[in-house]
Image (cartoon, rainbow, N blue to C red):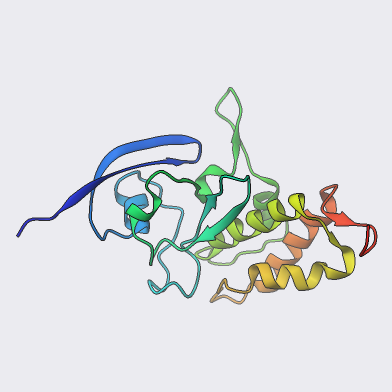
Amino acid sequence: MTITTKPITLTINGKKQGPIDVPEGLMMIDFLHEYVHLTGSRLGCGQGVCHACVVIEDEADGGSHETRTCITGAHYFDGKTIRTVEGHATVNDKGEETPSAVQQAFMDHYSFQCGYCTPGFVNAATVFIEGLKRKPIARDELEDAILKAMNNHICRCTGYVRYYEAVRDVVLKTPGLIKETANG
């Protein structure tokens, strides 16, 4: 039996990867873990339901969206740019990492218990906040918007309240994400 491979080239966390020969049909989560050794994305349900495995897929127009890696083949990402949870912190010239605003807020709010779902929540919150930078919302729309943005993510420890509080905190502390009125 011969395993058929095809090359894949993509950008992950700002770094070009590839071309790398990858078996056809390999799921992206396995590519991330086994080929580029990025293990932050979690294989939870393996059916695309829990969203622990999501990465951020950057769009050509500057937008971004979440993509589930447990049900999406690695070759779908050929030529694309993605970010994993490992790509959120910034690193200074001394090699010291500073967590992103979302990561810091999750720590400040003790948002996670076991932490298994946290990478997916970090990516979802990041996509949500990036979307608000492009299109701010009225303050009275915030709670519903957070719920909608985070609703697909499952936390078995039921840590939702703290995740949502952390996201709300980041949004309210980041200038330009909230409009003063619904019309302005």
